[in-house]
Image (cartoon, rainbow, N blue to C red; front, side, top):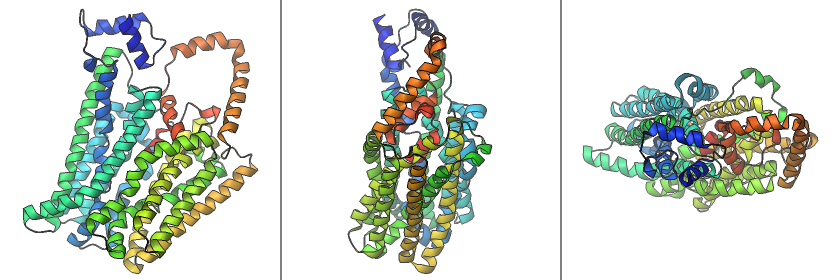
Length: 526
């Protein structure tokens, strides 16, 4: 019985009775007692699962910025201009303009979480191999096709990763799990930025010269990280299937509900949030994609130094995101924090464009502001739309973000080819100014409507308490029946996932306190 109590507390299933424990023992076989590392209900086994869970997306994040890490090599070896080079990022984004609406549906209704994760991992792996093969044979159209296939799997794989997390971990454990996933995502991006140049040099030495062969070989070596992530997907599928049999639990589901007709009902504040999202992120990711040569040409950095400073945004965001999320959660005032993040980002781009100050200063500021905006902006969607529209709202937000990234990536490349880095930085500053104007408009529109988005944490807590009291009064006649149903009903994946997202952004209003799309966390990771 003591063993049962320990297992019950670790799983967070306080309502589980002795019959369910007996069922699990029967499933294991008579007289068999599992070692802790083999028992899905024990913490040690779930730590093993967490290891594979964290590395599930490592290959995707490592290979996403392969073009940025090898910017000069790709352009020189394949004889490309910058506009054509940026097509590699655009082709990643194009499929996700549509797939953002259907990734969760495919995982829930078509493939299931286990098979869906394997399929999306295969897309990532095959896409990277095609990308590398295109470089080997010096066929840029094949490289573009590879990035398209890679994009099909990359974003949806992040949703699958989140779904596994909420299926295996609960309560406060989930906060740590999502934090570790975020750190591993940033680790993949950072390692890529700092190691791929060295890999290219070693391959060039091995083949006797630089060129498209050395580039293709380097990218093929990078594909090994995708193969490793595919192995993690296979292992996770086995472990999850085994746990389902032993613990009699269901496969995890994303819980996303997408209804495109809800778009017509979106309030003006939500559209302003969309504009902020696009205006801000198009000045971040395309800049990182083009940053290496910028630091080499303007600041006379070596390629190694350029790659290091270009990766600082990712390095800072890993530890800063949980800290800043906690700060926003405790203070509220999401609109003010978004405004601070946008102004800081504008200041960073102005420093990079018009001064010769050490770029580590501007890039560090950019890393902090990027993390702060992610913590404050994405949870605001839950304040302005009812819970049944959250899946559609986040899907639409992610969709137009990818559309903006695809278009601006090509535009940034064309500006750089014709006008140079100074004009490109002015263009990025203009994008940030659009985001800043939208934040100011959002502040005043929200103020006119009652200031829900910019409430302090204390005001939100008071409102939540009042709403809870009113709800208790309404539920009082059927309190006994409802409490029995609540005791028997498992907490949804949305509810578990939302605990972490609220830590990243802010306390959520009562009407959606247990529902928040995994698209939000996926974008925070990105």
